[in-house]
Amino acid sequence: MKKTSLLVLAFMLALPLAAQSTGNNEDGKAIDKEKLETKDYLPEVHGTIRSKYEYQTGMGAGRFEVRNARVSITGNILPIVAYKAEIDLSDEGQIKMLDAYARIFPTKGLTVTAGQMRVPFTIDAHRSPHQQYFANRSFIAKQVGNVRDVGLTLGYTLPTDLPIILEGGLYNGTGLTNQKVWHKEVNYSGKAQFLFTKGLNLTLSVQGIQPEEVWMRSYDAGMYYETNRFHIEAEYLYKQYSDNAFKDVHAVDAFVNYDLPLRKVFNKMSFLVRYDMMTDQSDGKTRDEETNTLAITDYKRHRLTGGLTFSLSKAFRTDLRLNYEKYFYPEGSIAKESEQDKIVLELMVRF
Image 1 (tube, rainbow, N blue to C red):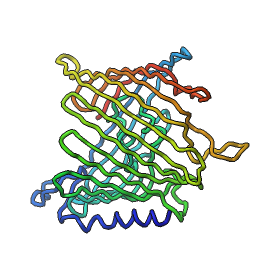
Image 2: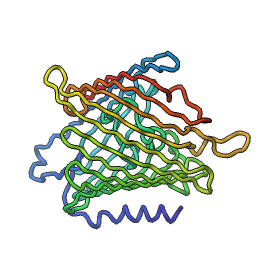
Image 3: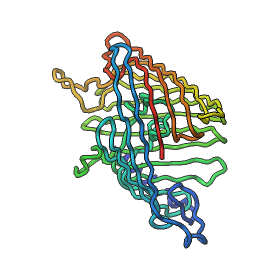
Image 4: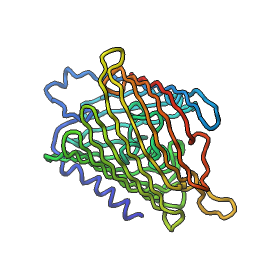
């Protein structure tokens, strides 16, 4: 494992050697050196509010919930230095510090990010709440590939005709609230995006995390294609556990979104359908008390989701979502209360 970490670190350190000398801003765009004197470095404040009502058809019961109440501050304090701090005031009723990092742009196309962040891995797990297409995240984004950690990430956009974006990093692996632990091993994550043509994206990712003594290594491949009205996406994730501590995990997420322009009240209406699935998974920490082996924390299941979204803008700004989720569990699987057939009505506002 030490060799793998050293290889990832060597790759990250080699990126600046290929870069060209200039600066970038927080969005990765090149900075015009002649206009630095007029640039405004005041911070920008953004927020996302997601309120929803869920009705579980099997129980005949419902609940209201504030899924997210995120507030973030971003900005540039120097032409090549940026920052972000984001907190969720109500992540299902809990306050959580999410992002807290500094970012520098030493040369054109290169970013260095240090702090607390979502690690570069998968397509769907990397989406912020206001960028999600459905009221509830896919299994890849929520259970299988959802990792936020403290560490260092390097990103580099290759200066080629075919845009290629590389990201890689090393991280503690002990979560966001346990940062004082010393580590002999570090977690790693890497991601490559290939932008073949306008609207077509291929993303390949690899990740290694060690919650306790068992290493979990994941590999992900995803692709999406979008036009003015369609967004078509498919993603597959494969996870292995060291020393055969748990059986391999497979997860799939595939969906189609079609936008119908409207002229009155709403800007558009979107029709969505999604299929996602996952096999039995362990979080690498929970153990069976009798056998002391890794226990199942998420049982195998399939899900079909259909939905309508009414938007007041073309981008993800103010969306009213109506989803229906249908779950399919094989015999022997245990369904959590929140992972059963339900109707979801959500209002999302981004400012």
